[in-house]
Amino acid sequence: MATVKWPHFFHFSAPHSVVNTPAHRPDTRRSKSYGRSCVEPPSLFWQTPGHLTTLGHRIPTSRRAAKSHNITTKVDPEQVALLIKNEWKLSHVTPLYRFRHTQLKLYSKHLAAFIIAEKQQGVAVEVGVEAGFKVTFSAVLGIAETKEDAETVFIQVHSKPLFSADTPKAVWRGWLTCVNGDPEYLRSLPPDFVSLPLFCSSGPEYLTALVKSWFERTFDCSFGSLYLNSTMLNWLAALWTGCHPTSNIRYLKLAWNMPSQPPLDIAYTVNPQDAWELWNSIHTEDSTDDRINIEEVQLFMNGLEIHFFRHFKIYLSAGTLTKVSTALGSAHHDGKIKIGSSDYITTLLTLLTECALMKTPV
Image (cartoon, rainbow, N blue to C red; front, side, top):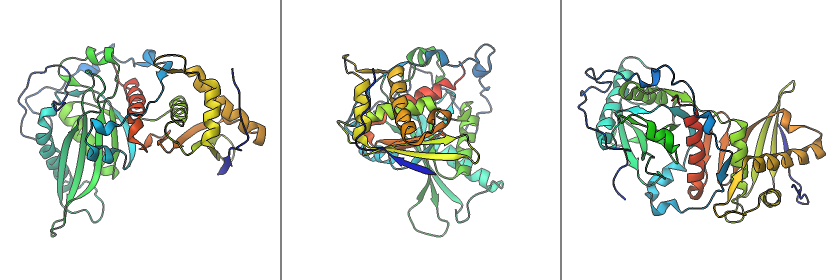
């Protein structure tokens, strides 16, 4: 891997307590089994012909600049700490059929029973993991930004040693969220559907697969891997760089994969002040809501690529941007993220929610 650092001399000039399940939805009785109720027919809403387009026509060409918010004033600090503690693998998920935030304790019992039952049927598990599992569902109140957003749901799976008094150990974590979701789309959903389109998981893949399987059986939904394309990574690079004056980003690290033989991976480290000066020469804060448009993002990335070419005669634009990293967070094109600061979590989750919704049939 080639690693390049940005010289310091460079300057570039360019032209409350109530859980939110949206809408009032009638309660319905479910069976006591951990899977789909045998008396409730599966929903065919997402299989309806003519609903196979995506939200692609709603991709925004501008966004509000990232602003620092002390999210712990409205979200439990202990829950926030869990979100910024791990690397998360991203998935998108279709709306959940008859999901109720008021039934989280019941879901905890059903998912635990499902995991144990699947293990007893011979599903492969890691060596050393004992028979007992405890599952907890909890609502993370305060992350939702609009009345259309459903409250975030956090899930933990703990292993319980069979012959030990030790405290159960968390072996898997995951959460479903929706932050600043497309309001027109969310309001268009039938009353029995709840949209939590972004699913983040951390832990053994077999447990991720079991959790997804249980959700699919119970709520008639469907999961898919969520990858981040170069455009989304470009947005994150610009948004995070714009935060430098108020929150030191410490570094801007970019990684490209070049289509050479053998393949060449390039790691490009930019001094944060140089990155900010480049961004500041492109973006002008001339509006009350301080919006950033896609043309500014493209100019910013072009400036980085031009500087690299001047020194190394390599066109980064010929390759694929695979990773963006600052002290505020990191994102990889294969759908892995780390949240480095809770102060900018809303900006990140808004963009990821958008990515997830673009994969959702309507």
